[in-house]
Length: 293
Image 1 (spheres, helix red, strand yellow):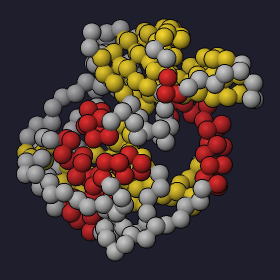
Image 2 (cartoon, helix red, strand yellow):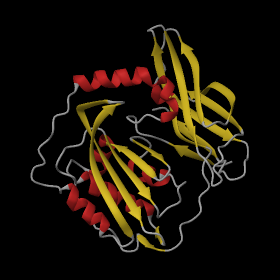
Image 3 (spheres, helix red, strand yellow):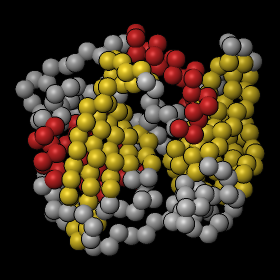
Image 4 (tube, helix red, strand yellow):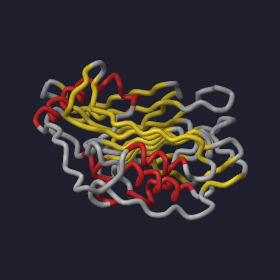
């Protein structure tokens, strides 16, 4: 049986683990306060948000592009300890992104060239049209960034600033010319949704006394608006040995907690998982593998 790997940015949290996010949010706030956001000098390079969106819109088949500087926020609390970049790209009906990796690289490079507020956090891109709503950009992200520093959802990607620096160099970056035919007239290929997305495997310490491993995920719906409802076999590995093996029922949101140790914290880099699904019409039930983040 073939399997697919889902990986993600170590800085991005899946909404499927919202119930265990309070500890994480508090730790993020503490980290933010200890490392305040200090805008960097752009050195006279890069381009404005207006310039980069015009460049993206000049690509044949792109109907609209928007860019936004997004200061860090936690619920209703907005802080100035980080700066994310957000981009949205709309593709005209009747056009297809025929070379997704090239277009993804180009769009990320355009975002990385923004020179008015230096980044500290993530670069997020939403794509509307040009690919199936269930296209998750996993292979393209893995080719560009390896197995870390990113996460993906339905027609969207998020990459950490560390991942951007490793791939595209220091901020603000330069933009390579986009090859011809990356976006062209044609039909968007049909892609079946995976049963789950925004998969998160992590760990937490509770009251300084015991350690737990957390697993969370959000369900994908198919073209009929149905969520995956079959049995899911979840296997968690610790240092390549089976730590926990359970069967859970597919649901809109999945959250599981497993006691690890009262004294020893798990090493995140040593944790991994495998998900196996029973067949259900309208879903790609290929098994999924991934690592902790």
